[in-house]
Image: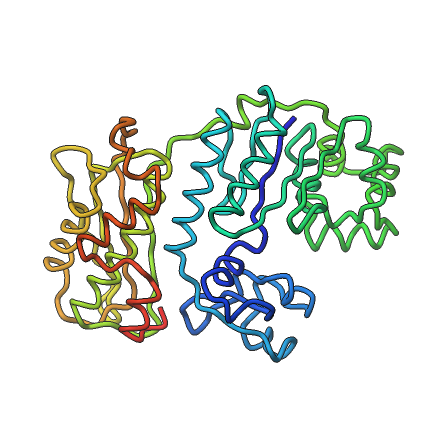
Length: 371
């Protein structure tokens, strides 16, 4: 069997645990730009009708007492890395599906007990809840996880699949979007049971047939599904709402983008040999530059120094519209190199000792960019 562990309202709940003022209030997380959208909502906001992807203005109309919180993606990445370490300590095979979702292979002894232990450890360490769905295949486990939210643990045994699915709406099936759902409604198909009957009578197209088959599959190619494809690079890019012509400010933004890229790289267990920067000037277009080191590096301080040197050489004083940082030419780290980063708190402490400002909230508020 396979499990999907999905954090409940991940970004929003992190902010609620950091700020007790938010407890008991509808909360939505938004980006730093003027043209931003809602990226996460807590369950109080969901009940008011606020959805991910909404414009903040629309969300406020629907829910007047909604509290909008600027995202701190560096913090979310760090906590996600800590959660992944917990999963890694219990399960030999898993994949990170997104920043807050993990598919876990349960083909080991005492797997349910270990899942419960991970769930409890996450709550004890971070004050966050997660939901877990367990089934014979990834598609079904994702549906089970969604049905168990929030803070649930749902196991769908092989002989329970038909009973579990028949009462659900077709919208819960991963892969059925707005257009497909609209088509099915025109065919008077609203539930999974109705969809299954429709397909098995021979009326469905190839895509629908495959979708239904995936729900009832009793096994899947574990080796292929859990195969980790080596990344080519780790990078982040930011388009600024306010043009920046101050080198000090650009360095701070560069350090933050490097930090986010670095966290992802370390989480995946890599070091980098090449650091690349791209600047987009407001008037004269793009300029890029890269530096290849003599050896692979997993030292944040050294990488930040390279970013600083590259920016000093590239910046010509013109207003900058966009900045991007990328780490490439990757190599898997030795286990001893990753010792510091196995604990996110140790990593953050090490970075803070070097007086490098890495909090998006701190520096973005200070330079008033709304970036």
